[in-house]
Image (cartoon, rainbow, N blue to C red; front, side, top):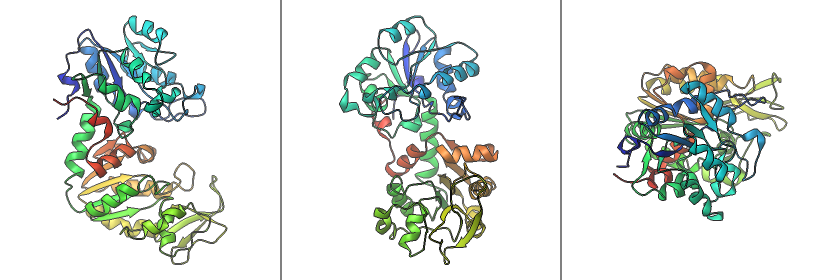
Length: 386
């Protein structure tokens, strides 16, 4: 068992809390979905109420180790301040004397984007980065489930500098408890639905799910790598050629019809093709079709456990949102336990207004997939044991 935030003596102490404020924003820097910020509130509020000073650490986007003004966490500080109803100080950096001075003034502090430093994503390139961060606090709490599968400085190296003082936050506790209870020994039939763009990032978990689940349904752009391996013409659809052979052995259920178009553009002319027909050379597949949904519907309706990760079409661009939204409706009407694996699936369900119909909305897509595959995560293993 890991040490939990409620086990820590925190009164009068500065607590470094790794949160996941990697939230979507529009072109004007306004947050379009604050789910991840809300998810961190129980831990932050608990620390404040127990007399601690929360020092929040997060990343946003992929600035590749350099300062990118558009990837500042300042909008997150403003939103958190609104949700807490008390001031949140936004640091202009995440290490250094100016940050230390700001923390010394007291109150909740949000540090600037950790990934502005190359040492965050490449710990070996700058071991001093963890030490500089550690100087800012007395204890460490991991409340960022969505990044706990990353072997980054703030999730793996930093907690090691707090022996017997590195704990799980409430969000991570909730995620781990729910996923352990429902997915490591699922009620059956267990149906897994995996979408998204790339097979390469999900091949390991697909192999695991093919052994664990009663049925694995595959959609999204990644389906075309599978379809090509089964002799289907996929036109200009996205395909990872180097993985075609590996996908042939996986017993998954693939789409039987595809919505295709000449380009991924709003309100472009669409055409529907069965996989027997194949997609013409000049078109690309961008969504699953109605026959696929009809075939999947009874499997979803009978399921006692459903795990869904990744959209089954290019849902951000109409008219290619239909497959994902209809899939969300089918899952929402299932009477079994329904679990969403973070990221784009979460955005799609929020878009469809169905988030309250799901049993569990995980804040981490990659993390939930890796937890299913290995039963643990690097960010958990770095914490103190009870």
